[in-house]
Length: 430
Image (cartoon, rainbow, N blue to C red):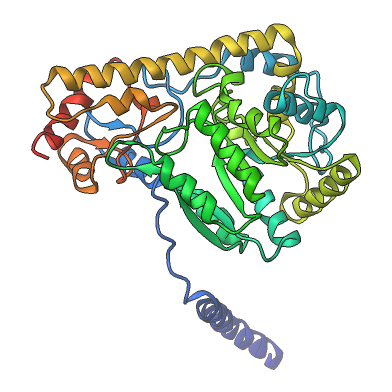
């Protein structure tokens, strides 16, 4: 009886002990992470969050750089659908090597360096599959920090905001160089050349190969040649971020012209490639990082180190998107279809630039909008102020980043007139 009494007593006490341990665990967790503040919202992705929360039927999202068709819907290319049909049930999903898909890398190098490039034949290029363009940039930044710890990176003003995050988190010091000319809505070529000239010899520069983000302003071919010559004189290293090859002009060869000029002039270069925009593989995270080396032996060493950097990050890259890319680019029929489809996307955006400019001119805008059609690629750097952008959002339910960058991919025949009217309304008294 006494034993039963003691057992009953224990049973009544045990529930009181458990909450005490739980409270202690919560207190410990609170003390460990209590100092962590919410991260600031990403300036680009935050636009979409605000857009989705807006119940207005008139709302328009021209903030995020993802292609939409003329109905405002995401587009899956026919060449991608066919590649996926061939993959389904026929190919395995085993791990890729640390360096990624050999076939994807081979095709990517031909796209960037040229189909018959002697550099590829001589095996002078160290290349690995990367997690789209962002991952390629980050791998290079970490490589730069590990093997050139005293170097820094010159980044254009302005640039894609994530560039700063990438080199910051790789702990590479950053400096800026002049790029955009606000008054002309074009390139500040003299300022750019002065900054290249004044940078210490052997500096690293981040260059947008085509369709500069966010401005849509690219140097002319002749200007690229002058830039390349000055880089040669100063012994600078150019790192190209090529996120829009084919998507800018509709011609992948034309969009790689800057890189080809630097190669003709004998530079060693780095290159980040992405298939998010030009194949619509946004969520597949397929890209390539390549570094042109002095010889094959150096390329082998550099590639081995890139793989070592990737190993603790993500071990090896995803396979599905790599299969899609390699199938499309290695099959002449599918590649031809892709070239047709990527030109179709580029042409639609170019057409929307013309339509937006013409609608603004019809409204009698006192401003010049020539820069809309002079710029190229997914984005139009409109020149609108943060306050004018706020008015677009608050009064017209139009969403974009506060620097005035318009994603032309979000402009359609159905909303271009509404967008032009709203822009005219907030800028006419400027």
